[in-house]
Amino acid sequence: MNDLRNIVVLTGAGISAESGIATFRGPGGLWEGHRVEDVCTPEALAADPVLVHRFYDARRAALAGVVPNAGHRALAELDARWPGDLLLVTQNVDDLHERAGSTRLLHMHGELRSALCGLCGIRTEWVDALPPAAPCPHCGEEALRPDIVFFGEMPYGMERIEAAIAGCDLFVSIGTSGAVYPAAGFVQMARACGARTLELNLDRSAGNALFDESRLGPAGELVPAWVAGMLAC
Ligand code: APR
Image (cartoon, rainbow, N blue to C red; front, side):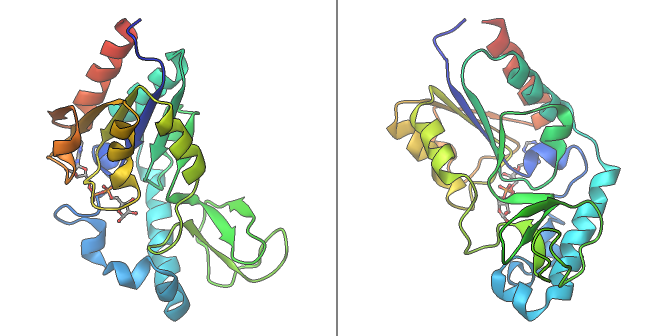
């Protein structure tokens, strides 16, 4: 086994692209269909809850038509067989990492298959359409919203993420453009803590120059090869 013990993996929309889920900033990307301000801010939710709920209902419904790809499956195999610490931090709100079998997983931007009560703060698994002002199963208040971290809101799990990066030997970024913070700053944090850094991406991300190593190509090919190499050591 090589000298690596503790790994943090960050994924973005690119790892789900080969499963048929649109990325955000590529041609035909999700945001291209909508101005971010229209669907992913607290102000948008207050101004036009029907539009915002409909946007996330469509993305939640689309999950039934997609399956994990080889990249998700390879990360699940690493999760099952890696003896050291491993934290998979995903910016994605789809459930493909879980469905592939990953368990040491944290959704920093929330999850489509979850509803959040804006008053009691309790989450409820949600698989169907979520109408505005749906009653919370826990407190009864009509305050359920998509469990998505909107722009301007604090991502989930930051303390756990920062602790994992502080103790990792290797930070791997997969399928993200490096356009959105705090995730885009994780590579800097990892470097400052002495970790090696690797980027697996279709194109060079905004932070590509910060990585010790960068492999360009589709995640469905790069991730299984990388995982096989890690488990062979
Ligand atoms: N394999 C690997 N990488 C890919 C593939 C693929 N098959 N297809 C696309 N990519 C790469 C693109 O080159 C790009 O760098 O995935 C990245 C997708 O970038 P974005 O669309 O910006 O998605 P992401 O980085 O996840 O966005 C971050 O921004 O809008 C917010 O909340 C949203 O979580 C999202 C965050």
